[in-house]
Length: 279
Image 1 (cartoon, rainbow, N blue to C red):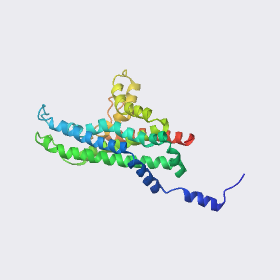
Image 2: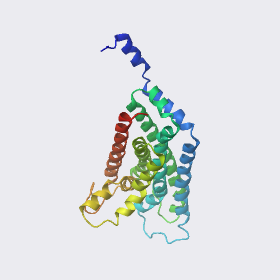
Image 3: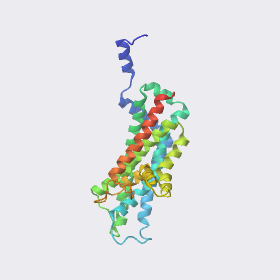
Image 4: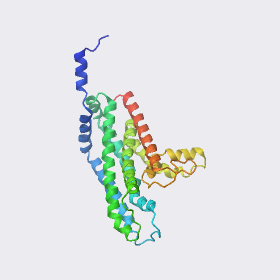
């Protein structure tokens, strides 16, 4: 058995790129895919356009007679969360699924021998880019729709509650991207990963309401990332429980924890698959 000498070990360490270099490399790959740019633009257009559609529609509908910040902020963030969660998850799947389909994953792992660092760099980049996109989208939607709600006395003035709702909606998109990345690394299939993202974010929460009443159905509803994301974008209610299994209430802080746990679990499963399988 041969042992690695000190110079050899030094050379091996030197060849391992810094994390900042990995981030830069992932950004170059991310920005070179037109489909990812188009999906980010679609998140912004759908989120902003949907919020404005609901705000403008106040004139032709029957607006609430009393102000409720939960209702106002729900309409501001709902389009971004509802549609953006699927797009963000698919972006995460594409980030690694496209490399498997094209065969460039081998070059990625060759450049970054420590596979976990390469996967972590993708996760950090996705979270930052998607959270920033979501925050810009919902903030512009809130600012542009403000005069329409103010006409009926339903405007939500900026403050801690509004910021919590806006940042929660944006952070949820970032976590959806990490969730999709983990699924892409685990399944190695863009189609399969996108299907799981759609079920976990949108279809699953809807179908869970039809499950037979019981503890199992309530636990399922709490664990689906889509329900956690809906809670993250809400305005915190005073004196509301942190997490209630029986009535299904999820506090925004609890939503953050549940969504982060689900995204981390998917990423961990993807990391195990990445370590155990050949590129």
